[in-house]
Length: 375
View 1 (cartoon, one colour):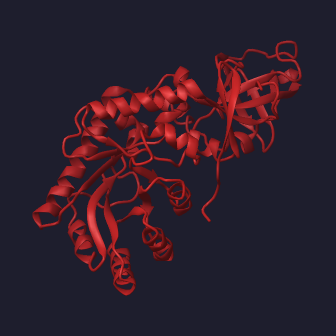
View 2 (cartoon, helix red, strand yellow; view 1 turned 90 degrees about the vertical axis):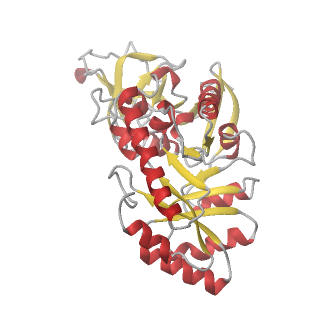
View 3 (cartoon, rainbow, N blue to C red; view 1 turned 180 degrees about the vertical axis):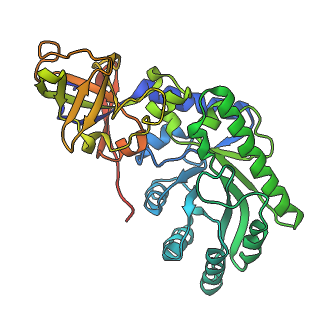
């Protein structure tokens, strides 16, 4: 098959770019003596995960228990569930551990720590726990200097075993260029090491010191004191990452294939069948210097066409225009013309689709099924 043989809109994965991105990150972190624990949430697909990992014995990160179950049932055992656990998920977590999954959970408050400890005592089960550290005020976690760090640790008793600390340098998504991303990485590392040392001084034996974000993983030089780095979107990249200078547009491996369905000639618009149901509503580049709308327009080879973007979108309609004011005409993009749209954010765009059409040299060489949801 080729790209003219499939229904649109469709999710396209450029195999060569994808595999190169995966290899580059493994090599980069390996050369800095830190393990990669790739995030599998973007792919939600075993074939995708296999390229992120060197082998299925490698450590992995997930964002839902459904992902943990799916990948464990397909041979991946060392799994970190990197969203704060809640009591409603204790039994499902325990079931995975009873089946032999080396599943770790995270939390950041005394209430959950006490509830998990009580559950472990009642069920006579050991559940490894990492405390989430807030290194930059981006979202959840405990500041590395806070007394609450020690309080939460003290609440982990019985089988709720403290094994490490974890953070996500979310503010790195606001850092432009290598220098800024490197500063964010150094803060991420230092925050983790400070928190770990405070806990070790009280006698806690921590084996996992887990950092994680694609910008800091791409530019980090010194990971001393950190045992692993979690990153996810590095394998496909997207326009947000390109806007930060983390990758080039040419390195983006994911796109959505769309077809021209009409025009608004007096407005200079081209209409496609790729609306926000195909692209997602993510407008991650809106706050960047170069706003890409809902995506950057490329030809079938993946090469950007001038400055064309999907400027706006309805549920099933994408409106392509030129920010510089070029008046697009029907003769330039006849009905049925196929285009590839690079996404703002790979994760929500992929989540709109049931499968990847995997391409090499513009030919479809495979189809990889994705899975969905939380249940």
